[in-house]
Image (cartoon, rainbow, N blue to C red):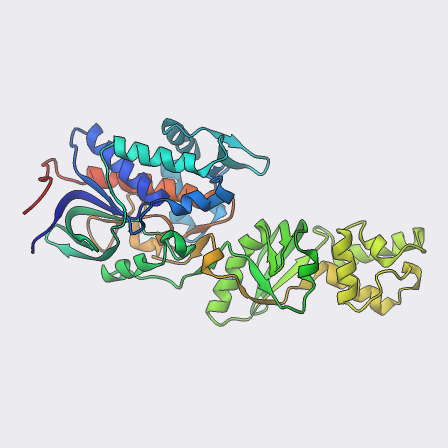
Length: 429
């Protein structure tokens, strides 16, 4: 079969993981005295769109503390992968690219420029300096094994490669190019793919809810995800009310439990405690004491000592209670209904907001099918799988970028050092 190009390593996908993998491959080859041809193929006309929109356009590249518990997936494998390229090494590597970081109170690390383009420009410049050949608008449609290597078909031609690094991303933000086609490529090479659902995604509430009147309001809440009657996750953080429902860090983190359960047909509920740390009995005791101290104050005014006034008023109306009624006149039934809604409010979720608004994909190629020391496939020699393509997703805060840097670095080192010393010709007839 005639090929248009020959490469030592073909990296498919030019996101954070793919760019890292290509850079590290080329630099490792050069450092080991075995320079070779590294080809980076991406279907988008302009690469790095997902990097540019991340973190509100500022690119939250990692977090000040990284642990396996910040990720969902096989914890033992995740722990070993993260240990191979630590946070300290990540920060030093980014600095070597010219990306200096700053820490925000939340622990998130951003470039000091507050501009995601700083990160993308640095990655592309480093790749080109390392000799990586970047091919935008080259959408890979098929990958097959051929002898000791691979044939990579894209919309412009055929590439023969000794090694392939698959870094196509998942299904989140498809407009940036990660439309899930990489899963089809992985399946074609013999890999399995677990069900994929949106994660780090806002949730849409029933239209009859009061969320629209609170749009823009943010406050802390404890969220509990209950699947088939069993609590599977509990976390506290900032919730943001929106015109369509709820968002904010704590909602984004909890969303994966709702989407995964819904995808498999399970019954799932999401409950909110608007006074985190207080139980129903503690809240009742607090309320009785405040009512005794201020019997003429309105129900809303008393409740707003614990929660934002707008939320207090909305909860009262939601429970068919008069927000302005003096607390001394609130009947026991109404009081209990309102207090119950404050500590165990069931969010009437209609759906998640979909792939166009999801920041990451839950599900993917099982980690058990790759060698965690190298990111090489256990099923196909010479094939490496990295980044969001794998069944591992992190919570909000820069953890998914850390996964990209780490898996890209591991695959780049391993792919380069697995190559024979002999160089391949730059082109074939």
